[in-house]
Amino acid sequence: MSRPVRFNITPIEANISDAVSVAEAPDGYAGEGFFTTKLSDVVGLARKNSLWPLPFATSCCGIEFMATMASHYDLARFGAERVGFSPRQCDLLMVMGTISKKMGPVLRQVYLQMAEPRWVISVGACACSGGIFDTYSVLQGIDQVIPVDVYVPGCPPRPEAILDGFMKVQELVGQESIRRRNSDQYKALMNSYGIE
Amino acid sequence: MALTNEHVQQRLSEKFGTIVSNFEEPYGMLSFEVEKDQNLKVLQFLHDEADLGFQFLTDLCAVNYPDQVGRELAVVYHLHSLKDNLRIRFKVFAPVAQPDVFTATKLYSAANWMERETYDFFGVNFVGHPNLKRILNVDEMDYFPLRKEFPLEDQTRIDKDDQMFGRG
Image (cartoon, rainbow over all chains, first blue to last red):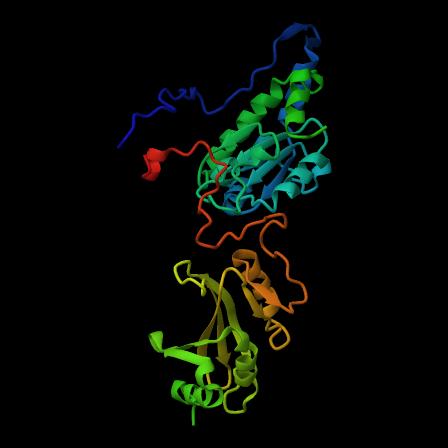
């Protein structure tokens, strides 16, 4: 009954030639004492390196998040030093844990209170799809109530996996076009969730 | 003179006769059955009598036996006598067509939320309960999840792989 592996067949080789990693500057035109680039690149760079997460930690994945924020795996290295528990002040909603059907409207309310631009990362099997709890009381995936940007699978995902998901969110944030939130496609997405 | 199962059984049979029946002792715990409409009288008797004193309601739950026609829903009471450290259990059977059972909230305040939970999951209607509404599930739910006829898995999943779950 075993099936051939379909995912992660050609993993990306890590480029570790030296102990120090250098972040690349965005493309632009440089001169003596000035550097010009696209506004969206600069804004993306600033946003992605200072994302303020809102940990919506409900169950076991919340414990893994605590480990990720602690000193060994340190999420603060990526700029997410200041976690806030008020949606009014945060950019990134991290949903970690089982969301029950009764909690769905609460989660939606928290998402609605966040200001644009906002991103959502769904950590763990229960938040992504209901996980092993395929029952009457568990919401089968938070994407039934809010739009999600990155899914991190695992039960629970290791802190490295959560960091990997966070880095993917950073990639999305860094390359986002300034006009994305006003585009028709985005509006259609929000309407499909019933959000204005 | 410590309280024993035999003493409790003897007192109950003297007082209630045929209303209590089916005395068993699985794993040493006395279990019996009471007629549906007499549950409050039995509870009051066990609570008030000086030598019995079962003044702690440990648990109140229900079981669904779909095969016993006319007695599908059983409400189970677990009582504990703190003085003498003796636990007993009794069951009250109700038909699923009319699952009315008298509420024990006037006697035990713990029964309040436990009866709400029993109503939420099995649909047992507790007559005289001050606030009988759903406690753990979503308020708009119109079925009773823990009854045997309700399927275990959420029916909105379309991506479950039947072969992996032994159904392919």
